[in-house]
Image (cartoon, rainbow, N blue to C red; front, side, top):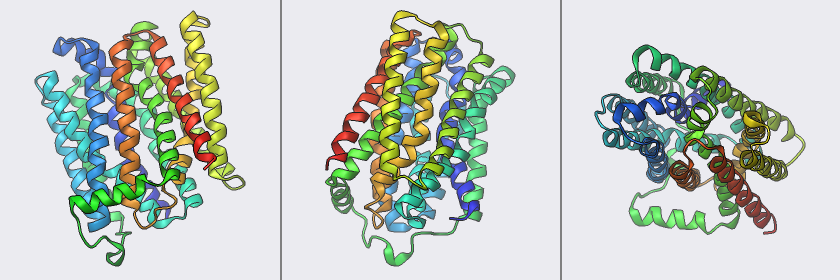
Length: 389
């Protein structure tokens, strides 16, 4: 797959984490600005996850019917407009609604990018290309909190969403001029209807391999979003880090994920993706248990939580590309539908985990640690189940 396409698709997929990570330092300020509690502010994250989960169900069938370009162009345009809406929100309820709209449109990038990679690649090669996408999109969570903190200090929280709108327009331009259609007319669905989409989704869901790998990857990813939704409160309010220190911590976790994704590319030259995935999930679970013990007992203080957390998030550099390629491997003819269903399932689980830990967590590290460990345990059990199929 040409490097130019990987760079463009990676930048577009990075819109998702960028729209989450850039405004994390602003969550305490949003709480103060709108005069609401932390749980209400965290609903802006939960709404984003729900929007991503639902929106992907639309773009999957559309991309299989009309090709990859039109849904992507529509979604990126909508993302830019919704970002402006977020910046002009006058209440927490309005911000929640605009975040939902931002996710419903922006998720086109996630669905279509995965489908394009599947159009170009066979399953094992797909895992390696997805690892490269992680390298590109991983720059976002490294830089986003620092950029967000700088914009927050300079112009206030609306500037964060205006910046996202600008990035959305840039991605729209790159895709429009740099990515050709990868889904030729002769391979497209001949109809688009609710019944046809339902049949396609039912067909994909009936495949046990898809179900096992998609749910396992979704649970692993949910641990990350439980961390994202509470990290600013846990580390800034609970452990007393400044916004700059929090940005460094957040960036180091993202660096670990990027590092693992590139090690994953090397491992895939000699080992099947499924084997690498099982080892990574097992390590993820062990580190989650260690972090929960530290959070419950206070052993090690900040570092007793931060170090095993870094390890857990680093493991995601192995789980994301390998679970995605393993789940989508049987569906070269329905890449859009499979990509959409994969993303919907994963973000539905992530949204649930984020809402639960946000509601009960506050600024204590234990709910975050236990949620991550529970997600890791579920992912491990599902992998054992699908491996025996």
